[in-house]
Amino acid sequence: MADTWELLDQKERALLKKIDDLADRQYQAEQLFSDFEAYDEATYDSENNLWEAAYHSRYSNQLENLNEGRRCHKERLVDDFLRYRDDLKREESHLERKIEVIRTQKHKEK
Image 1 (spheres, rainbow, N blue to C red):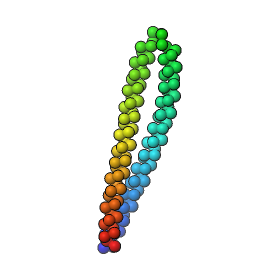
Image 2: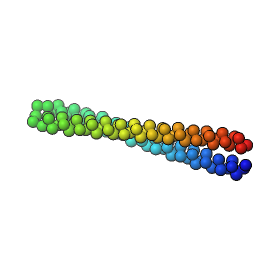
Image 3: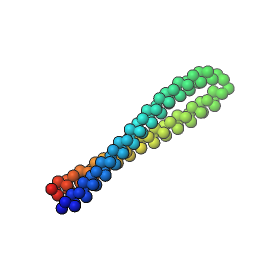
């Protein structure tokens, strides 16, 4: 009985460590996304300045095509980030459910 309880306790500690690691990954991902948003905002301002300068030039079509490609890449990056963040949250919820099961088992072992 004591061995079972200790085994459950070890499993619980391992799962809690995984949750801490997930929280660190979530924080890093949010920081990276925040940095990306700042970069994107600065790029957007530069894009507008370039567009105004090149509006009537022969390069306006090229600039418009480049900007469209940039927007598509940005949308894909944002979608990938949101999917990654959701995956981390799902994994965290799954680990929390496993911890609850272990805690219930530990309570029964007492």
